[in-house]
Amino acid sequence: MNKPMRKITALLAAFLLAASLLPAVALAAPAEAAIPDENLKNALIEAGVDKNGDGVVAVEELNSFSEPLILTNKGIADITGLEHCVNVTELDVSINSLTDVKPLEKLVKLVRLDIS
Image 1 (tube, rainbow, N blue to C red):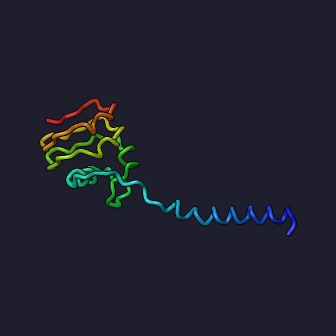
Image 2: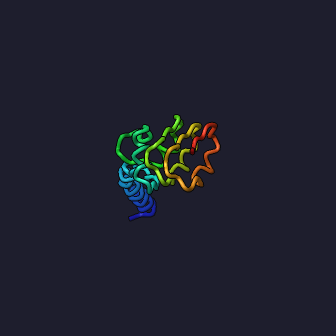
Image 3: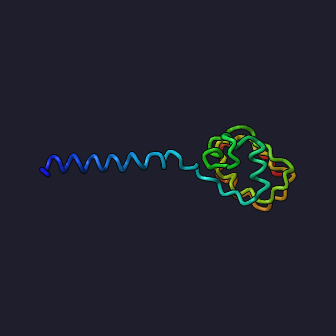
């Protein structure tokens, strides 16, 4: 095989390999948010955060959510996961059993917060 033909064969092989990987990349599930509190996860789904309805709260869904997030009296003890709600301007987690609000530190767009 001559040099130009080897080069074409190598390029074709690389293209075929890359093309065969595309479906796997396209079908990869979005990264699920780490939400250890099942009550929080269920409350987020109930609030409409799970936009695609797959029962999974993805980091991307939390990042893009910008509606008021009302999670009052849901039996939530751990709000880990809410740190991804960077576009939320209103958050109500009152009447829950919260002991740590550190996950809210990055929510700089909040204009209303109720943690009573």
